[in-house]
Image (cartoon, rainbow, N blue to C red; front, top):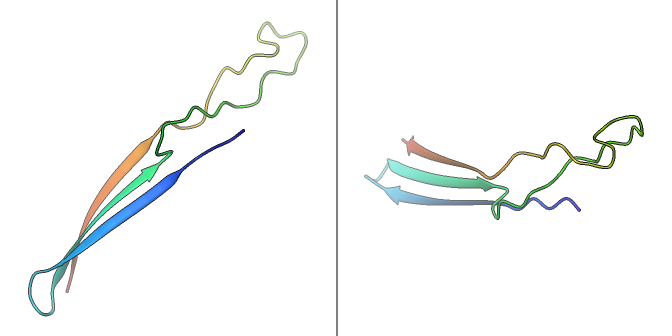
Length: 68
């Protein structure tokens, strides 16, 4: 089966009364589970029944935003 956990967290910190800073962290495929494509179905192929590629591995992105 295909399993893909996504997670995001952010923290907003006030700098002044009208300004704040926001830090965000986002995780895609959080637990880095291997999700394979469907196996080869062509019986004439030397790769018949094998999955030769996978979906994207874990990806992490960070962001810093100034709100005013």
